[in-house]
Length: 235
Image (cartoon, rainbow, N blue to C red; front, side):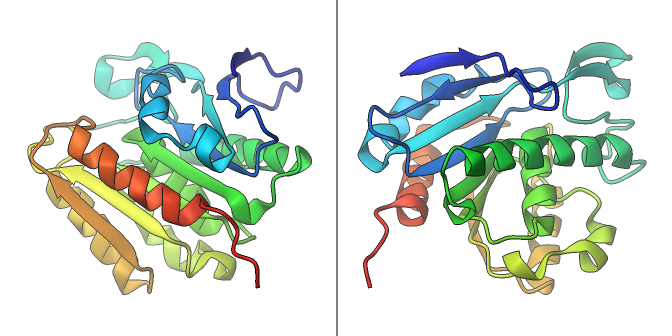
């Protein structure tokens, strides 16, 4: 059941939404990368085979359009501005926190639709992955997991002060291409190490690929999502 959502609430981002036929029992909110939109990962969802099998609703929001400094100020869908090629310098903390607020609003919407917050999983690619890492680690209630693809941890110097105790044990999968020319592998490795030093367990994967998603990676992502969102075990 594919539909394009034009949210009535001005605070909620417009999104592509993929619903199972049965009532949804879990949700994935999946954020795209810079310059893309919610349709970018739409073709990937059937390959994961989780919507009907697990009763998962997938929400693919569109980022707001804004000028992006590194792209000569061109206006495009972006979760935050990127001032320089070195992502760790001069970060757009205001834009990152604005996107965090928008993602929190989407999580709250899933809860109002009857999905327990512990069954809401955050996923993202590149810029979208940075936002789900930033938001999930700070979220005040335990989430189902964070899937962070070809990305890095933004505002890492603020993590120690802002991390949520509720998500100290959150499952995190990070995956990255060894030939990524956009988000260097070294930056992703530094992010992983910073998270591990902070006490998080990271399910880390690398692939011989550029800034992309490859079939081998899709297999691993599907396996990880099945573990995170599979049938609720009865006691």
